Image (cartoon, rainbow, N blue to C red; front, side, top):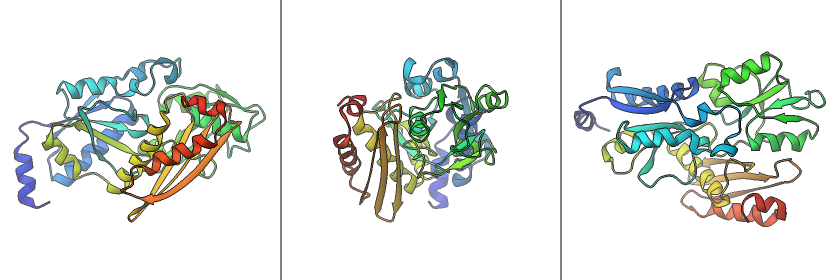
Length: 317
């Protein structure tokens, strides 16, 4: 972008750009990353961006799993309302927490460069080193199924709360171990906490490690601003993973993993679907051109075709 065009864009802002975010420490850290990217790319002053924190429904309900009380929409509902009403200009999300079907008045305007996609194990040096019958806390059906597939003796129990709360529960001895996304720990300057689990052992959730920014579809000005900070490689990879997820009609009940990598004009997508108790796992992969938007859905159909009736039923098949 030329300096002249930058000035034209900035001249159109007669107030700070308002960035909506959940108010958890991790969400705020991610919103600051988006704000800093805008400040740097557009050569703005700090007062030209304003963070607007909100309490999401998902932050209020800590005694039940998301699947029981409304799914991923609990993370986006309040931000969606504010964006739709013009209270904010854009909203920042952990993409793994965003529903695959979004309101048509919004558009995914940018994704920041993807961070570490791995899970990290806290409380043990490895999954194998956990004591027999160890209590492992997770609210993720994917992590639960993947753990039980490797260690059927483990006692998997729900754990909710922000990163600091979960780590404190391990420290207090309420659980033997837990799993957290490496990306979130890094963003909180806790990148050395826990042990990295290979993606060959635990394939991550679709879009894990990616930060997305949504804007109103009819707001061309904000969309243009966001385009300048977006990572094309991350965008293409995450869209492939979300297309796979969308074809499965998966929700918070569904143990699903997917990871796409981009090499030039080609994409490589690995994925797996599991029974909640880990007793069945159907995995597969696909190479395709990045413009082939049907390939992720075809991989999903292939995996469903190999699944047992019980596993298909989880995905409404």
